[in-house]
Image 1 (cartoon, rainbow, N blue to C red):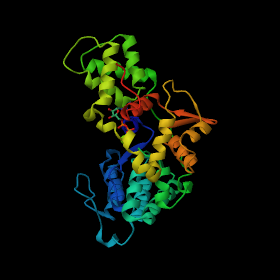
Image 2 (image 1 turned 30 degrees about the horizontal axis):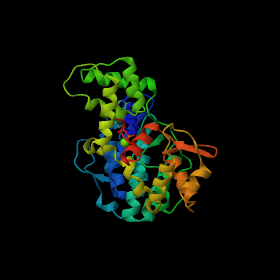
Image 3 (image 1 turned 180 degrees about the vertical axis):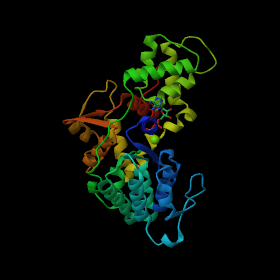
Length: 341
Ligand SMILES: Nc1ncnc2c1ncn2[C@@H]1O[C@H](COP(=O)(O)OP(=O)(O)O)[C@@H](O)[C@H]1O
Ligand SMILES: [Mg+2]
């Protein structure tokens, strides 16, 4: 959808904040969570004159600008990384001359990894520390992003939404049709091809203005030719993207992440998604859907998660796939729908 890209674009342009991105992808311990944060602060040029580094040197080794891997000072290694994180961000808010915006990416996955790796207590402690910091450090603003929702993580942390209820949801992506059209036109320029407005608008519609898909299809059309791209050629490249295992690989999590996120409910989640499929993308009655999948006990909670995960959208007692393009890709990859001949 473009979350990480948006964070990069926004933080590089805003003058309202000292904006810092901290990518927690792959983090699996509290210690790594802390050291990723400290490294991001060290690398932020806007903080170099703030006196922050000097403060951090009291807690960390090798934290000077351009230094190597950062380590917690031996004398502090008894303290929990979550509490050192608290001290680090307090030092940040004391030294920064204007409001700081911390954009943490892939936070829910990091918390889930920590829960699986170090236990529920450790993950919960980190969630609570982050919440405490959001409340006490008024000079720091936060954006938390990630490719899975926090609702998949809370059970693993033995907690409820209470640790998050000060956060608001920011709607993001796909691009608007106008933005998708601009991206499509620029991608065509990049591959040295052109197309009529009608073909471009078909291209944008097929991909649902999801930037990742626009890039992928455009790259398949980058075959050295400079002939205009016809509507049929756009459609063909889109279908090719879905069918080609190598091309599709990086998008496959759409299909595979049900397993880790839904656990024992993954099969039911898949059945509900199948039951909600509709070529015309019409709304389905929830009662009918429940009957169709055999009235399982877990139906309501799985449906709720599918809506929270933006697979489905709800209107009263009816649901449907939220993004027709993802519905199409799902049904094609599961071989429920066929490629048009
Ligand atoms: N506004 C945009 N303009 C052009 N390309 C974009 C835009 N947003 C995202 N992309 C493309 O889509 C890809 C996926 O976006 P990304 O931000 O990594 O998604 P997410 O973090 O939501 O998974 C990026 O690598 C980039 O190529
Ligand atoms: Mg991302």
